[in-house]
Image 1 (cartoon, helix red, strand yellow):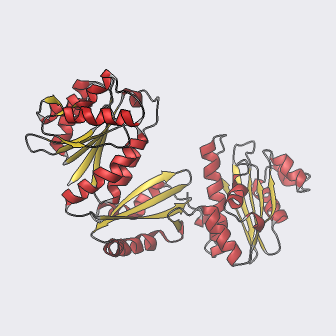
Image 2 (spheres, one colour):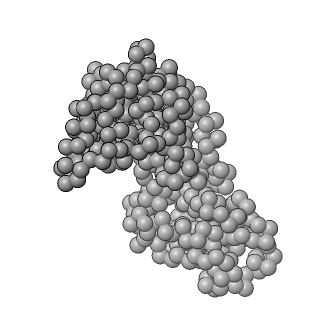
Image 3 (cartoon, helix red, strand yellow):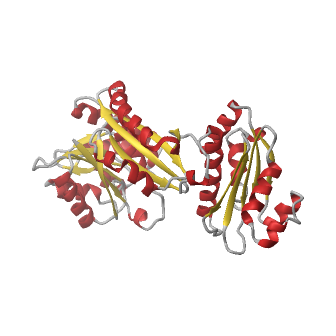
Amino acid sequence: MHAEIVMIGTELLLGEIVDTNANRFAKALCQIGLDLYYKTTVGDNEARITKVLDLALDRSDVIITSGGIGPTVDDVTRQAVANATGRKLIYSLDLEAQIAARFRSFGRKMADNNKRQAYIPEGALPLSNPAGTAPCFLCEDTRGRGIVISLPGVPRELEYMLSKKVMPLLVERMGGAKVTKIRILRTCAVGESNVDRVIGDLMTTKNPTIGLAAHAGQTDIRITAKAATETEAETLIAPLEAEVRRRLGVAIYGVEKETVPEVIGGLLAKKNLRLGLVDTLTGGLLGRGFSDAGFGDLITVNLHTIDVSEALQKAGLASRAEARDGDYSKLAMALAEHVAPPDGIGSALIGPFKDNSTWIALCGPRDMRLTKAGRNYQNFDYIRSWLAIQGLDWIRRAVLGQLTSPADWKE
């Protein structure tokens, strides 16, 4: 048994509003273990909605619609559902009475156009909507293909109907809810294609399944299992997670919602290490992440500018010959050494230089001295995020004792 959602409204196609209802549907269905296979967005056009619903009934067991059951002329979902399920649209005096009573509770009289909401596909099951004026309904396809459940587009009403009416109804039809367990493993400074090369063969499993999600400088690995209980789902996930961790090793920095600065801050605090930073590349992202994670007190020096020359002046290194001769590796190391606390690590992200290069240097415990040229710098937020993650990852690996040479740098 699987589901499909149909989001109805021309305003969605025009980009006038953000479709948050689809996210509500996805989360609600996941919570009861009902697989969501498709999502379609269609405008307020009876023929097109009918066509979408007809296709949905051909391939899905449960179709849930959002929108188009209001009182206006362009609210045509009711007729489209009737068309697709092979039913007539009939007028219900009981629904009219419910709508009128709802308006009376507001101290208002029902307008004539609200009577449009009293129409329903013949034989459909009405679903009362105490949160609004639009009656909802469940309609079986006359050819036995599946069911269509039509809900309002108003988020407040949708939330109520999902939690109070639709989810209990679906759980009953499913014979009980299933548990969907998701484990997120988070990597940094490893591109999506590199992760795929290492674990791609594991991504063909059926239950659990593995999927990837790429972000700037990070790739998330999502392991999803479905079972009757949470314990059973955890049992399914455990061996696959262990194999992913074995293959990717130190590239995995954390789980779920953990951030790179949060993890590094914890490691530094545990080892009683401090951190000095020089950053001319990311607009202060390198240090800001530690502050946001609550580890700002671990930073002894946070020298961030938008200009390498200014950084050199602040560090008292403006006369360094390396700056004139283009030996950017020595220059980066000189800055890292300058800010390195006696009980910690100095890190420098500097550039862009005249050849458009960037450099990262690390001066750390056990007399560690490492530098490496980074990717060409462009003044884009995405590139800045990439550079910040790369710099952070090198600090993380150094603290873990897993960074011994520039060859360990993964891009």
